[in-house]
Structure formats: C-alpha cells, structure tokens
Length: 604
Image 1 (tube, rainbow, N blue to C red):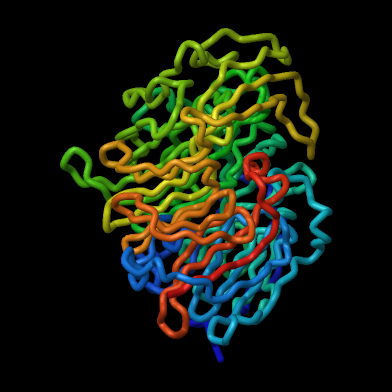
Image 2 (cartoon, rainbow, N blue to C red; image 1 turned 60 degrees about the vertical axis):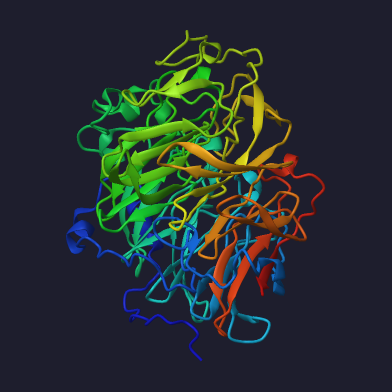
C-alpha cells in the first residue's frame, strides 16, 4: 500500500551529482547557466494538511502550530503513551519527526540513520532504514561541536526526504523505499564543518546551511535543485559582497550597514576567511515575497581581542531571494559579539498589528537577551525588548539598530566601544555577564499560536564569567581562546518558559523551571502548549495562563521538539524524542539524566 499521499515525479535526472558539486563548490556567485534554466519558484501552500507535520516547524513560517483540537485543556489529563520506538543512539536528539500521509520519518544523531515508520500498521513498524555510506560506530565522530546533534529532515512533494549528514553531505532519499537518490558534499568535515541544521524546501529548491563556527569555519547558505542535487547558488556570511551575493546597501534603514565589502573591512586582514558566521539554525520562508530568512552564528575566534571590528555578517539576520540567493537585507544583531551569542535562533514569520497598523513581521528571540519584531520585507527593527536578564546592554537603539552597551561591559577590541588590547593578550575574568553564551534562548525553537497571538518560548536563565587567551587557527581544531563558567541567573532557577506578546514587547505569563528548558515548544488549536525539560518531563500548559495541566516523565532529558499529527484512525497524537547527549551544550546542566534515544507517542 502506498502510505504517502504525494505523487512521485519521474527520476530521469536524479543522479548523484557529487562531481558537479565539487566543480562548483568554490563558486560563490550564481552559475549563469543554472540561473537561466530556472524561473522563480512557485509559492508553496500556506499550510500543510492539518494532520501532517512535513517540515521542521510544520509550516514555512516556523510557527510550530498545529490546527488539531481533539486534545484540549479539558481532556489533556487523559493523555497516555500509545507506542514508542528506540533509535539505538545515545546522542542528543535535538530535532523532531516528520509525518507525511501514514509515514513517520525520524533521523538520529550521528551516525544519522533515517527511519521510516509505517503508521498504518499496529505498533508503527519500520518500513525502511537508511544508513549513510561511510558512517561508523557512534564513537568515531568527525570533528564537530556539541554531541553531533541533528535538528531534522525536510520533505519534498515529489516523494523525497532530505537528510543532513554530519559528514558534511546532504542526501536525498526515496520516501517510499529508503533508496538514496543523490548525495552532495556541502561542507568539509576535516575543517570542522558539518551539517546539523534541518534543510528547507522552497518549491523545487532545497536550502541548507553548515555548522562549525567554533572551528573557524566560514559560514555559507547553499541552494540545490531538489530533484537532481545541482548547486544553484551559495552565499557566504563573510567576505566581499560578490561572495556574499550582496548588491547595494545591506540595510537601507541603518548607516552602519551601508558601504561596500563590509564583510571584509570590518575584519582585520583576511581573518574573515576563518570568521565563523555559520548557518546551523532554523530556516523560514515567505513564499509570497520569495524570501528565505535565517541567522548566522557567532564570529571566530571566540576571543574578541583577536578580531577587532564589527565582524560582519556574523551574529546577523539575513533575508535572501530564494531563486537567486541575492541578499534582500541583512541586520547585524550583535556587532563584534564578544559574548559568542550568534544570531542562529529561528525567525518566526507572523502578520501582526503594531501601533494600529498591520505589518508583515519576523519575530526573533536572540541569544543576546533581546526579542526583536522586525519588518521582514525591509529588515527594519520595529520593536526590541529584553525578554530575560541581559546586563551587557541597556537597550537597542532603533534609530541605529545597535545595542547600547552598558559601560561596564565595553568590548575589549571593537569599533563600537572600548580600547583595543594587544593581539593575543590574556584577559582577566569578565564581570558576571547575563545571559551566558548559551543565550537567553539557545536553538530550542519557540512556537506561535494565531488563536492567542502569543509566542511560547523555552528559555535559559544562565549567566557567566569569561576568560580569554591566545589561540591560533588550525583547520579541524577548536578556534576559541575563551573559557566560560556558567551559573544560574537571578532567582536561582536555570530555566524559564514564557508567553510573549510580540506586538507590545511584554511577557504575558512565565513559568520558572529548575533547569534550562532546552527543548522546543508546540502550540495547538486545543489551547495547549507542550514543552520538555532537561530532566525529562514533557508538559502541557494552558496557552492563556501557563497553568500546568499534564506531565509525563520520559526516559531521558528532552532537547527535542514535540509535534502533533493524526494517526490513520483520525485521532490526534503527540510525539517527542527523548534523549540527551554527553557533550551537548546542556550536558553540564542536565542533572541526573541518562542518555538514550526514544520516540514516544501519546494519545487520548
């Protein structure tokens, strides 16, 4: 029985194209031949079928909202486990499954095995299993940060699953059989560059980033033909405008973002070549404007005294044209970024009303402690307010777009404040800075409910002290020069979960958690929000009040993201993967949890 609803296109061109990619991977500008062959992709539907979850955030806007309403605030107390599945991997399970038709797709951390589970049969048995070529036992990892986590898959209506591999490759897999259709190299793991972020499908284009800022990897975002794997465009985060794919001012609203080749001139010499700004986070899409939105990771090295200048376009938000990769706008959230915050957290797209006027917005909860509401067409900041302790800056100046730093936290070597220290000098410990380098929010994704208009945000409450030392770049080795000590923030709790009003810049309600809330959020039309904790509790709370209505203790800590879908019988189900990892960013904060990967499915 065909359990997928999608029609499959002929595969006359679905050949492995690694050779073509190797010939093109050094090019930053668009291939004229490929560009000429491709028209602007048709807008994708505004939302998938109600009972499915075919993309990382369910929809292109990354709302993580399900329109299902069988499970409500009145009956959620009857929610019980229905079935489970062991992934066989002990690493950090940071993503979530996809559900298309009667098939559930799940990818593990390294070795990045992909499973298809047949929901139409009792117990959802394995329909097929994809083992990436060359993957070895989990103890033999390529260089890479943070327990080799993986944030998920992407699906194309032609019947393809796209799997990011830690080895630096992107694989296209037949969703019915598990057969590999093509596989292309997007990053060189020998330099510390890997793939951990979920790809994004936009029409017949699949877009993917890379990880590895901690290794001095130069960030880029790449677009491939979804059917054949041909490289269409690649835009870098640092370097000359021609390689960034930038024409004219990066952002017409701010003078600090205007000028030629700022991706070079705001760095010393050619340090931009190892400048970080990778693209490990989530991707969102406006199919009407044909724009893909994403954030870039922190600059490298971590020691800010070794990289004077604003370090554009690391720690930034960028909007690119889907068809060409050209930058529509860029906005550097934290110039110079001596704290290692980066800007890779998700950008949720929502049409909001601000000051009585409707606006197409992008809502971004940055690690630096500020929540931004931005005009997603122009890149202009409409609102920026603190959503947690952030003592390094007083506010964000909406006229300049630049954070107003507290003088006690003046940058040691930057164009926006503070004298320069000698290159490579060892600095004394910094004053206690809030938030920590994990940010007020790390990569755990928030959710948005159109029913209440609120954003539901899993948070850390962590501060830090930093010491810096000299470090030299060596391919494949950590390029940091920073040591961080973290501690609980104000109040003594390490985590929070809040409801945020992005039109007013205010917290509607807040739940304190003893540990950092390192998993994502799910909002449903049943009036519920689901989220998980580092000590393994899956919780359901009321969207309007935050009142806790249901909990379940899972076998391991939760750093993954719950989803909602319907089974073949039409009943609503909730699923989440439980499993922390020994070297995940939150491993020292997880408490007494046991590693282990288990998919848990709940129903009434």
